[in-house]
Length: 571
Length: 43
Image (cartoon, rainbow over all chains, first blue to last red; front, side, top):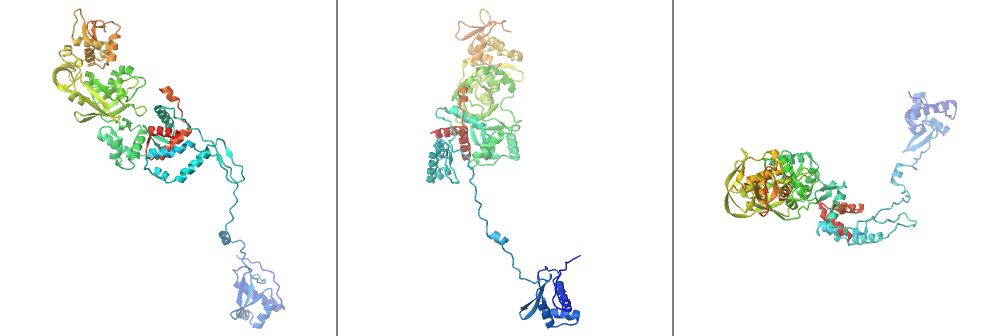
């Protein structure tokens, strides 16, 4: 319901004239019912006249003019294009011309931005500046990136920048904090640079160790082996990538290098700009996947393996048993190994090594081989190339553990095809720390009846054997010198654990009986014969012969480097 | 010798310098290169 407040309006004229004027104003109110109370309402004089004639039955133009003149505070007259209009408001007040208040308008505000507020001078914090010696950073980076790098070129194009750097660095040589007290908004604060370590007196090895030590603790830096990158810059491998890498290694049935995996699985070409980056990424990311991948490489030849791969090397003996057999060798290894300190090692092959296709991780070979690249690395796959047969073998190096000795497996075929126990092999290091050359000295063809262990019957037999390699004759296990082996079984597991028992058995198998009872043999013969049952090094055998408390073994005074054995003294 | 190696402690400034080098390089840097950079800075 619409309610309107009726204003108290006083009309001029007689009562009848006031009544007519009220009717006219009501007509204006009806016309402008939805208009503002002070909005101008225009009705032509002729329409007013028609209205009066229709409602009262009388009226004239003079009458209308008179009413307007009698109520100047209510009605106004306007002439528009020859027509007369009466103007009034719904409120009955004198219409006044309205002027829009534009003193505050959006247009004005948008078009006239407020002046920038005056900023108070901020409190300046001391800012550490780089050490003046950083001026050589330019040269260092140039060295690292190469003279033709973008960085080097950019630096060479900006001599004014270099001058500015020099100027800044000169300022920084000021020893104390200086705060300018001038009443300006900006202040220059120079603080002394943090001290850098003087490395001029440090050795390369020590410094490298210190660098590795500190950077390893920095979460920003990614490390693999001897290489460093910023962790956030190392691309990540998807779960799909990891699965495909795992499947590919399993499919190939042997450990594969990072080169092969990046090219074959990740499909990055060797000449691609990001090849080295992807190699690092593969190594760094796989190293974090302990459950699925195992690093079995060296610094230059980074092999990766997965579980359930066929083992490299012999199946004739368990790896743990071989490691236990070599436990004694742990005592011969130096406390501070000098890895890769020699370039070549010559080694006389023993029966034990020949039968199992292995080489021992003795002090000589340790000095030739690389150190484990990763912490806790148990094995390393090496490649042994034989130039004489144009063949390369995958060899698994098992690093020693606190309870088991180390050794290298996988040379069965090379030994069987070219050598006999007693042969001399030479192993040479190459620039690649995971790749070695293995050679033997060739000779005219020789034939001997040599010792073999018949696998099915587990008995020693002598078989005619021809070979064309140089051998150390004292170590050659031929029937003429070791007749006692014929038809014998290897000593049982319990007996072979005792080195003295194995050595005494070797005296008997040598078969060189002494006149007054007992047996005699040279040191070389004992070393060759004892190595049929379990591994012996010269050091270990010497210790057994000379450290025997029962007195069963003694030096033979009549022969050079020979020993005697009186049976019954060793259990 | 292990005892001598433990005596070397690089400052935070040294580490920041090495990290900035590693950051600036698009490929992995070797420890040998980082050692060389430390020595060059001291010149």
